Image (cartoon, rainbow, N blue to C red):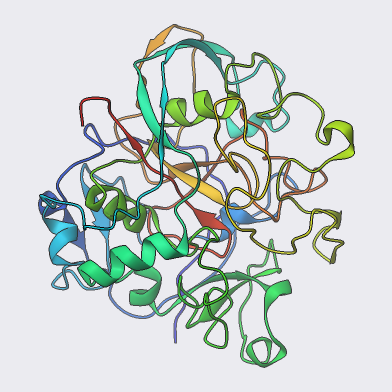
Length: 376
């Protein structure tokens, strides 16, 4: 089998859908023929390698409203292509928190990872919006799948990236490839949202954990079904900061106030040993750690979160009103870091930090949450 290639960060001008909560009936599916391959380009900055868990096939500029699939004739599902008129009787969607918006300072003038485009700091105005109080869970995503028949891209591709430290010996024995620049990442056959560490794993005891192995297209489909949308990067960062200015984390500048853990992160030496001092070696149930000042949970740590924006590292200091990122691109922005983040390797669990993946990428530390507009 030929494997899809995996590339590291490229500084690209990327873009965001003009209307994020679009009807997926307008989405065109592009085919990827043949088998898949994985490779890695030269490393840039020491990191957890999260950005390397990417699929090839979207290197060209991707147009508006385009999702990636191996089989263009295979529609995602009826409800993924038609906006539902009603939500099921038992509303399993997350509670929404209203954020009033206004001016805030986005980015930083003291970037920890400059090549990620964390700066410069700039003034941004946002209109009011609602945001889900926690990441979408396995239970919620399962309800969506049960009602729509939706099939994720990881399920279609037949594999997804998993942190090797979580794999069973049986699964490890089947591995033949790893990411050269981040050998702790491996494409695992049968890994998907139902089986986070491969075919011998299950989410049965993890229904309140964030759903993983969802691509940007998968997240978009869920949000459309829920009559919501993915947050812009600016909305996500505003929500993360919770009214604090020039602070590293959603709660301030000290990682562990009063010696307490405020997020699910990596403790110990990455990638060899996680001491799990925060109580978890992988994901944790949502709302396991203190909320920020806006009442939002897990804005950093636990699982990376997709945003609506295309990736770019070029920003100006000009004031912006409801920015939606570039108009076109190849990678989407993700924010917040994950349980794999450690300051020595992936200091991206800060509000200003950012990373990217191709829209069809999926991994064992990547999830999402939705937002909504006040008039919806």
